[in-house]
Image (tube, one colour):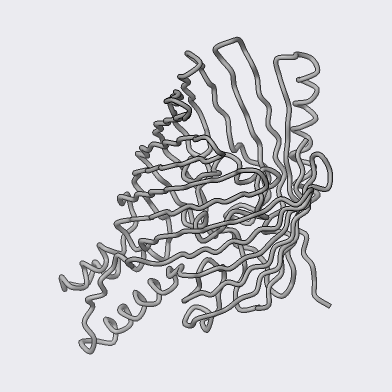
Length: 409
């Protein structure tokens, strides 16, 4: 019988719900506060023990032994309306993070000034607006999918940033135009490794058209740093070799304060019973983190309380950003360094293709039950965690089975 790991639900519930109780008591005492929350209880299983299925960055995930660590989460949000101009929002979220912990963390904490019906400014911690559903990708109930397509959303494992933004909304004929400029910095953890994006500057633009069509474009530029001990040791060893061809490899491998950009385009159609979504994204860096392009297309149809859907997606590598010019045959040390560089680059190969089918059942007013099946074909490890040597070296096909219950309150 396959073992089912449900994750650390007890400390998750106690910690976040403790915050919710306190916030609810505050809300009762003063009507300017409003409290809301969301959560997911999910389980995932696959047909392989050679790698773990995860949401990008998580260290623990699903194999043939089913796991609740991938999707299970709980969040609470408090909004404070101070007056007609000023408001504040705080969101605490507990889910498996890059350290494998469920420690509740502040996901949002910002103050907002609404200077006019069209113009607003926020300062503090906000959702990182890299994707079409960035602001609510953790709110399973707000999405048709069981989880956003990882071939796109797995490219940037950062969900919030600290800084400020300015948003402007206007009407052009029957179209509504939204513009956002933002700047700041962010930190995250990817499978136990610290990441940071500094000097972040970006924009988003969207247009809502008649007929339920929304168009979106976004771009962000930042300085990326990966705090990996093993990577720094490798870079140091390469730079210590008195050969320019080897030192250049070390400079290319380095991931300290390197330029990184992310560009995304999207379209959504929500008309009558039909739902269609598509995004195309491009990640570019000047380090060993590879350049990738990702895309997905989702089509769904509402049948009463049921919404079946299909998604096809793809994550392709455009460049490893490293030209391994270390010469072979000069010494065993150089041969070993060349092999280590090749292995490191192979471990970063995220290429994969996914075909998914799923169904959403709106069981109650605030509860949705979902099931999803994915067939994922990887070239190398793809977005899987803890892959075996054979999995990393080869091409793989993995079947993934997921169920989840999403709720809001």
